[in-house]
Length: 296
Image 1 (tube, rainbow, N blue to C red):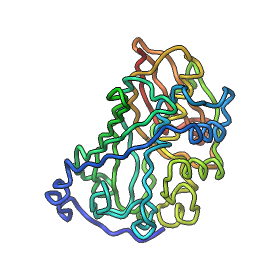
Image 2 (cartoon, helix red, strand yellow):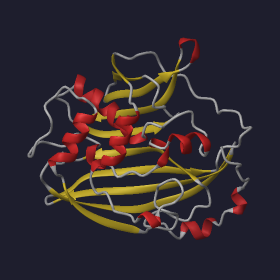
Image 3 (cartoon, helix red, strand yellow):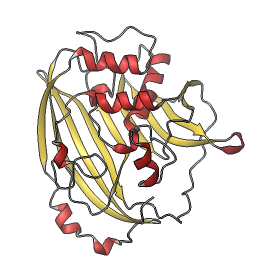
Image 4 (cartoon, rainbow, N blue to C red):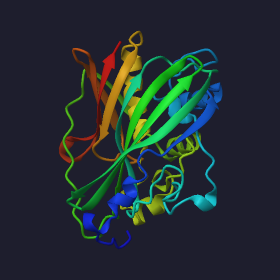
């Protein structure tokens, strides 16, 4: 683990960062069958693989719109370096996906031509217990030939490296297994394949030495959007005839590649609550991610 520097909010030029608000970019793509079929195989799903003309499962659009950032334009963690694209020059080294909110207006159809417009919607700061936190909100809008299909607000948090002597932050306890549940364990190969499919170079997902020595994790980290995808897959399994229109989720604690975990859920008046229950000592489970869904 590296020696972390100590910054405060006063050390960060927030007016300069806030000038990045409103920056946008648009990327075009085609929802080809292979990436969806490859994720279907990676997750060992029992259903038939997606084909041309099928609806793309919700949240699988992260398989598309990948941009070929030059290797020389990457930062130490494998993400685009600060100041590249829609990555503002935040002077904090760690980047984490904190959560998001999605609205699915219509299904994305495999085979359709689509575009993704992303905009920096907000940049805010907060002084946390471990140091300053910078929150970045990206708004993504997906269009096909008929118009708007999907809207997502993605929350990213930047923070300092962990101090070697810092105590581990407390994690909330998860509820017991819900009415629906599905056990999972994602090994190094599964994480590598998901990183490749999403063109995600973040080293915490495949570089064990970096994940442990630099960012202080116990192992490789299961991708946040992959956990969110599995929460929606649980609802597709137990409610295959119900269309998801809204999904909001929030990360609470990381899941490591060597840990078995459960995706749990139960119905609510408007939809369902879903959560990720990871192991912890004494038979208790820690909450790794929570979410809520609304059905059509």
